Image (cartoon, rainbow, N blue to C red; front, side):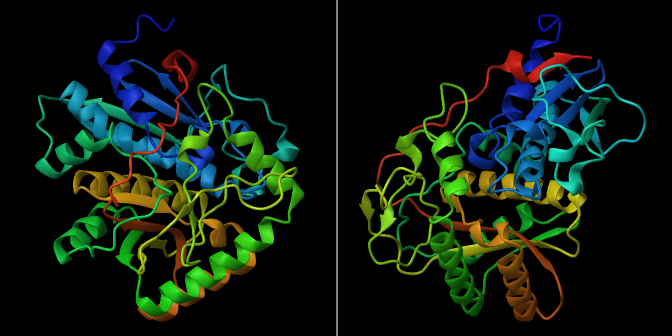
Length: 352
């Protein structure tokens, strides 16, 4: 069943699976249908304590979709079109992790019987634009960093490119103003200090570190603890049986350079599009010689998410919803962290 899927399609889906995902849970499945690939959300595979609404899971699927949108034109030399949440009957593929309807986040209960997106291709040959070519070339090199960055500031051209890569389909990306940065880091630190006393959260963290050969976060990629206390990163060294952080000490950059991804609404469609933008920002950063980290803790809790959105809305003068905040910068010379594993292609790709 897997063997007759064309090699170029398998390569494009393999590119898609290199996307960022919450705790490297890879909550996706792909179905090849001759002239299209359906992307399904595998919500039962994703962590739920850290993601009670399913926002991060759907953003993860959006990140994979962004890679697929880049990979198919390069692998097949064709034009692609994408339909989000296509209507009509569909049969969920075998291999999705079972989950009862009652256990689904309410916002996602209608998304278990349909793909989250269908990507079709027509015509050719097509030569992708230079900027898309650069993003595609960065797919195999992109990774999420939890390590210190150098203090060198991004230049105006880099910020423009980051903003352009992360803007589209209802999502905008802008550099974070200094006042927002201060407020956001304070809120993030508050959430992080609160969550390290939550037994369910700690147990979930423990399950996703060194989880196995094909998913989860290896201990060699969990980062460092900021000795100066400026960087409130998620502490993946904690667990219900550990007392205090086990992270190595690190000297983080004095001024964190943050970019904010935001939208007018806060629906599953906005989450999917935010995942697209998040992946493209990461690819653009990689292509520009930069590294990217993610600071999502304050968006996971309803009260702090509301406060984050209100702070950023005030800074730009109109009401918006913050979907993600990322940290950008140059590497500080330290080695690349351990590579996060990926599920086998025959586990995530089937023929329909």
